[in-house]
Image 1 (cartoon, rainbow, N blue to C red):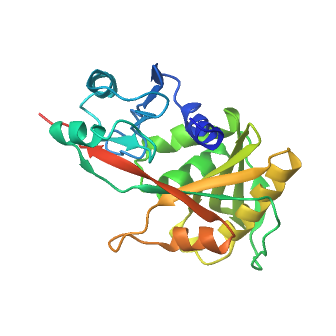
Image 2: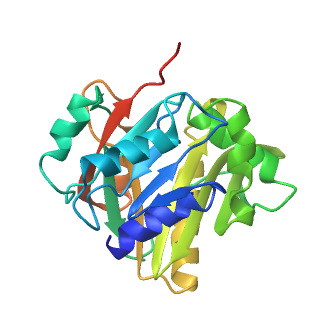
Amino acid sequence: MKREGRVSLAAYRCLYPEAVILGGVTVLRADAAPTSPMLNQIVGLGVDAPATEDALDAALATIGDDVSCYVAVAAEARPPELVDWLLARSLEPGWGWMSFRRGLEEIPERPTQLTLVRVGPVEAEAFGRIVATGYGLPDAAAAWASRAHELGWDCWLAADGDEPAAAAGLYASEGVGYLGFAATLPEHRGKGGQSALLAERIRHARAIGCDVVVTETGERRDDRPSNSYRNILRAGFTEVTVRANWLRPAQIT
């Protein structure tokens, strides 16, 4: 796995105390959000070494059939038969994720009345709540996200007076800054919070020695919103590649 992919995976793997590594395959299971394939994932299949049907079956058995999950299939995943194996196991194409990268140049900021606050123990609950709300996750996932600042992430809130309005985080390793957890409460959208948080994270990434920043969002599709996609391009990021996500819904008996 290439440097930027390793860091993107590490950014989230640190949040899963019981993550399972099977060869080069990482199994991430979030009991706090069993219906969210975004948080329940099998990553790395066929990247470091060609996948096998046994490896696929072992990963699916490990994550369990009581959660909805994505099997991530990178553009470079091998062998080509992997798609046939997924179809044979009744998985279906889900919403792929486009990855982006940019250098550490400053970006123009929109004027905003919001103020930025670094997340510590006092702000952690608000950070988790905003992330869970912004991504449509169950309430239990708020506690999961609130631990990010303790586990290698630098996190910020944008506040409207005393009211937390938006959240975002940066995970840095190997000279790569991964930008994630960007979310804004609906009533505070359009106030420039994410623009300010993006600029702050890029400045921080440069200050701690990163040479590139990366991020991702859902690929462009006619039936999906694209505000995040447009905002990322407007900030000077370039598209890299789409990672396919194959969906296996939870098996309810």
